[in-house]
Amino acid sequence: MIRLIDVYKEYENGTKALKGVNLRIDDGEFVFLVGPSGSGKSTVLKLITAEIAPTDGRLMVNGYNLTNITPKQVPHMRRTLGVIFQDFRLIEKKTVYDNLSFAMRAIGASNRELRRRIPYVLQLVGLEQKGNRYPGQLSGGEQQRVAIARALVNNPSMIIADEPTGNLDPQRSLEIMMLLERINELGTTVLVVTHEKNLVNRFTKRVVVIENGRIISDGMGGYYNVEKI
Image 1 (cartoon, helix red, strand yellow):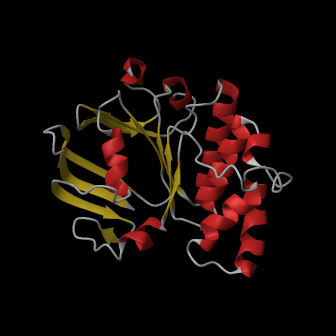
Image 2 (cartoon, one colour):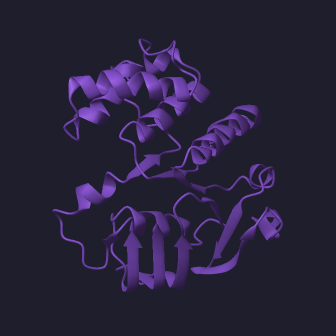
């Protein structure tokens, strides 16, 4: 579960990025976070991943109180999250399988765990035949699927997708979003940050709209002024 309680964030340059944000995302939810550039979306993500700390307010992520979390606790908290980036961030000189094994070994997984988990995750994202390929041998949509598999491989309780379809065409974008929907149906909480209003409106999900550092709308469906974004 994620909970922001009256959270403010002011950067050193004086930018007031968040102005009293209250947000709760329960386990098992699928949530779109949308808003114009500079609205505060990236700040929310950086707070959730403990990249930055709030100026004021309280922040809870999967049982961790990030308001007073210790440096030693941060890696353990981050293991509860799987993050998907717009630019994939795959290791080009490693195969698909090795990209996933690298992520698992980083948290001390055994060879037995690798052999059990990686084939399952590759099958889940539809890449069971591509484990020996290198990122450069894959399409953009396939590379994003690898990035999703890497986010899933350590079995996080929540997936955070930051503009996951930004570099893909509309058909591939829809496929990626449907994959995230399936992952959510299997029990993983999903938070998607996106500018793609048409994609948001294809799914009947909770949509949280942030603008000028404040949440201005929070409800089901792509009804809102997502058209303005």
